[in-house]
Length: 389
Image (cartoon, rainbow, N blue to C red; front, side, top):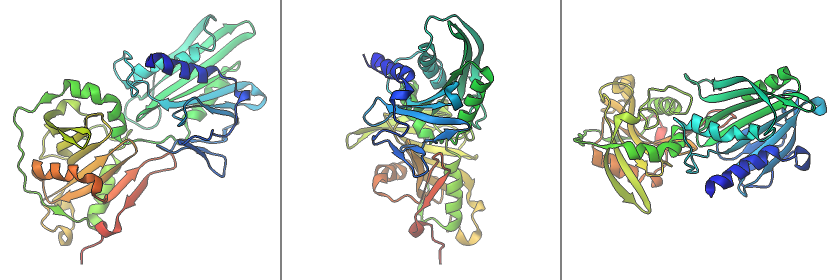
């Protein structure tokens, strides 16, 4: 039933007439209107401007009370070519059993129905159908399809551009008689300042599969000598850099259950309040860089705490080392941002790391990083990042 409901939502958004909609976002919690006419999604910070190139926003609608499924329509001058952009929670995040090797393939199979629904019985010629590089990752992160339909009124070209951004799916559909104008519409949509999400946003979509295949740790070193230290200016800068690269579309060799699932084993599962937390051990080389040691993951994938290290203690100026042998910190991330909540002089013990992770909700972050479409946002706590006297 849930599968059917989401399908109906997507297809209804796909074929609803733009003329019946308002060109401003609906009054829903997830969206707001900026003074310059930008429609802004208030979760990860998607920005849909009033114009994309020569295309003008004509319609904006949502079929969910919170605005989590939104379609925006744009038209070229004279209405020759139409561009629709759908932003919605990923179907696999919603728990739908969709086949496919990964999140891109699974959601592409589902959401390409938006294009098919326009001309369900018209003969077609597929011009392009394959992977797509959208943004600046080091591997394809989306799909593209270009089709020419034979309709009674003449040939119609349609392009579909699709990608995931964390737990959200983004689809741009352009169609019109002029194929070059259709291609230009899709290229303009891809060039919008799309946000990036912390890797934990992707973990939400893969958590159940990851935990099903995670093996138990046969033996894991729970000892450690690291002690907490307050952040200094140098540590603050390193933390900001370290967290910044944990955002999606960045380096792909970082220790994280999304990027290196085979290197994690399960230490134990325990309960914090009403939430099951899975303690993980990272089985890579803890003497190298970057490296991790312990991770504490909410069983539903909505939060991850990890003890990790990207730099050596020698990279901290001598007057600020305070006994630091290796710069190690405990990071916390959810679907919106990543943060550093504790710094250590070396790898801490498992019990110390676990205690800090359990109490993390009450701890003020030293540095937190988010990446909405408007740009990277870094917030620091001055009291915890001051220079030592």
